[in-house]
Image (tube, one colour):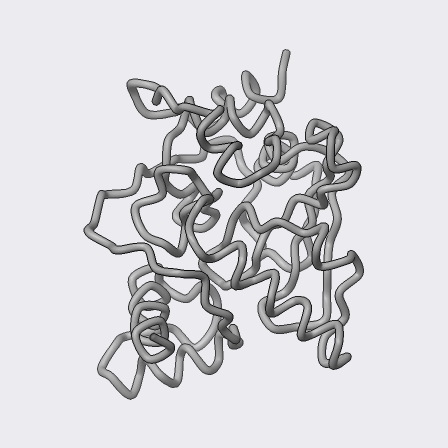
Length: 227
């Protein structure tokens, strides 16, 4: 059984599947993409697994989860600065890291794009939200998701309780957004997001996941400030 078939048994996809012009997507990115990811994106579309983990998608409904939007470039620029300054460890060359997902706590998922011409061999890396820790999975994005949901891949950066017999995928609701040029931004830890949200009347828990609507509101506010 393939990893995608296992994932669909753990977490049924929505209907119907999407038809994505992958030749146009890859041309815009200037690189090939892993076949497992293309199959995953076709089948599930844009959205989030367990209201926590959102793979980037060519039809992501906001710039913050769009594979061909500005976020991969912004994040890569931040990693370059982190490495140059020595402020946070970056175990892989930043130019070899391409962001392919995000969690509600602010961890980013990356493809380690080495070798460049063999995307089906790219491992998946995860970094702590503005912290020093990294985790690398020597496998595809789909096998990573299967492992996390089955409990065979333990990511110290993720909260407990992601493994289990049942999971859900929630498709994203389209919203209007205007993609702009890539702008380097500095991400912050969840404590700063919680403080910002409480000052504006949001109800946020002191620990655990930052609610999706709070994180997206923070990202929108800081994106507008940067522009």
